[in-house]
Image (cartoon, rainbow, N blue to C red; front, side, top):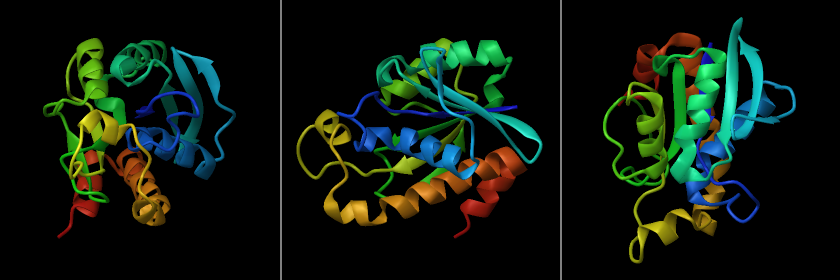
Length: 186
């Protein structure tokens, strides 16, 4: 079983924000896989489906970003998922817009959603799909991540969400190492 967690903030006010790319990717995966309707549980929304014969749970914590780990911990406990079966899709300030990487472990780089998951779920041994949003040219980081993509960026966003979904799917189908080799070619 795999638990794919999209990070974001609930509600229409945040729907198009850079900080919500995780939700955008999990929604795309649910549509792609024709998953059942989303249900409320685990302080979040989830749906369960199969991919290549393996059960996959998609989770969107509704706790707001800073408390995401509470929701992830509840889902992990219920589905008896270990940390190495968790894939987290999140925005990444340290990568330029559009750059994406798969990573296991590592620090949180100040990302409060990741900090919460590490704190509540027993460590950093989960897989991450790091969706590059770049850093703001000026202004505060918090205002930047809670703003929508620029009109220029929006042109590419659908294609990038598709690529991030491909990466998450490859992690589930082929394992993290194979997925990294496939998507990190130079």
